[in-house]
Image (cartoon, rainbow, N blue to C red):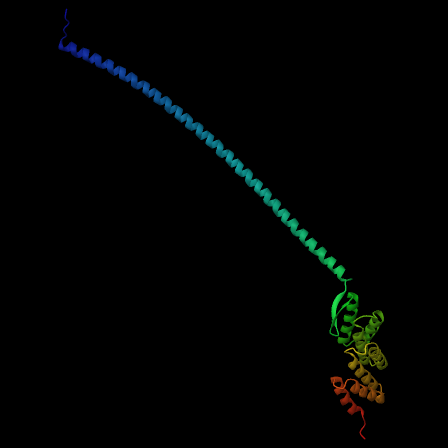
Length: 249
């Protein structure tokens, strides 16, 4: 038996089939949407986890940076402290060395040039000689005479002794102590006949003799200068003074 449908029936059947297919399609589409939403939620959740991890990492990194800054600050302070301590130590060491050098310098011989030769003298010896010379330069003849006398007695073997004898006589002459001037220069001529001070010492004797009224003795000393040092400047002065001391005949 064959079944025939009217045109309306056909349309209804067709519509029913279409609705069935559409329903199935909608059902499939709804499942895809749910899966997509679930996947999106998972993705968002993962991103949130990543953000949280990144935030924690940044916080940890910031803490580490701050810790490093604090450590650097402490080390910088320590370096400055050590630098200051080193500077203080250097100053202390320099002061100590200078103090030691000064203390050693008080006892160590010093090299000086006397009569064209380099010689060694004790520090206190040089100090005493320089002090006496300073007194003479200041015109303090009495003080200088006393200082040079004490020097010659205190340092009988000093390289300065020939000079000290000469300046002793010069100081005495300035103080008008002519006997002392003559005696000191005769001592110089006896002990140091080849000294560069010898010609001047002999002239000082002549000057002291003339100043004390011993004119004849002065002329004799001047003639001796001319005989002993004929080509010297002192001999020229001796000749000039002889003319003054020799009476006109």
